[in-house]
Length: 529
Image (cartoon, rainbow, N blue to C red; front, side, top):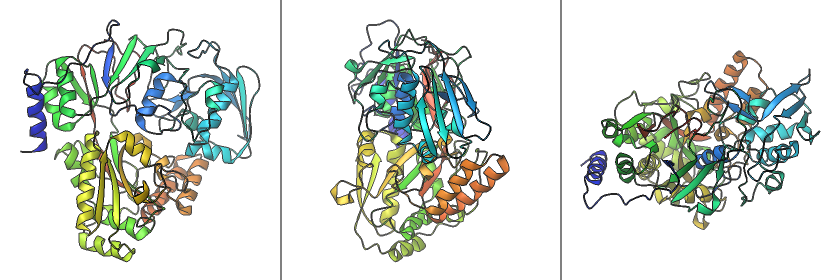
């Protein structure tokens, strides 16, 4: 029996009162809460220290940003009321909107923004590039701060308002002064919802309540931009890692919204008259196989290229969304086909004929001699687990010895930050999936090649980093396209990571929930139950 048949059968049994029925999920005492099943458990809540989407999505509720991207991926003012840029582009002066307030009743001041920018920019690749040319960042008065640079940075507003993690969330100065290498334990926010820390049960539930003193912008909400008006007074994130259980809970009305539906169950849910199933957004997601660039064997580019030669993206895509090619696309590089900067330059290593024999030879030539390869994949995220199973099988076909670590996503997130040898708590490979909008341009942190980011295994490539810098300096689309083409070639040559394909992900919600917009994360503004 196929996996999708098993899942569907379990879900049907769960809705028919069988012994496999999902356990009852207790409803909150407050009237009409919104109950959301997120894509992962909120195990670590510091959206600067932890770049995982689950922390960003929670952070988007609890903290606000200076700018926010709209559906066209253009940064718009959010907490900023106005900005001025000097003629030579080196001095940026920002003024905050008046009346902004933290959840403890204190006003949001320029010094809070300055401290938050400093903590964010210590972790974020775009922020680090600005810091590299920074002359001064200082609060001028309660609402005004100035960032003076030694050279222009044309993409300043994009950096401060981007959707890719980590986002530049504005926190109280006392929290933002926490070393970026340490997790915060104070969650006083600036956003439209308050995090109820006392109700947080990692592995089970996270709760957010509307902050009635939040001051939304006057414009309509548009992704991270516009007026973030919260209609539902309370939102509960209910962690349900098992897909069949989540499906049954949605059908039974025990939850209202399932962020990422397992594709096997989407047709069955869509046939139910009380449920809506739609793609999250038009760009979808991209699967990634990440290499540890500092530990053998993948510190050798030949070993990394061997895996690019061996993997078959179509197999990875079919494993999670089936044969319907309307739901997936292969990628001859690092930019999705829908991206403005898409290029197939240098993509032959991914799109050419697959040869396990040639890949096995390349792996042997790298010096690999059968040492255990530690591969991590999250068992509580169905897509990642499927990718991990395929990768483990591919490695074995290449003659590799595989130590397959299938654990929860929170454990993967924690372990991937460790640079220790794999046999002492480190790793060689891990699986993730990212919103395709996180890799539509060279600003993607997954391509950053300065050797200092654990999320992409401390990748280090001077050629790739030079291409990225050239894109940041570009002020016209022609130059941007040329730098993207060159970057794709260099990043494939140096095998920064292995793209596994671009796939559609659907959300599902009860028809009683209104106002959900197509977006890469669950934006709660204007959502009603």
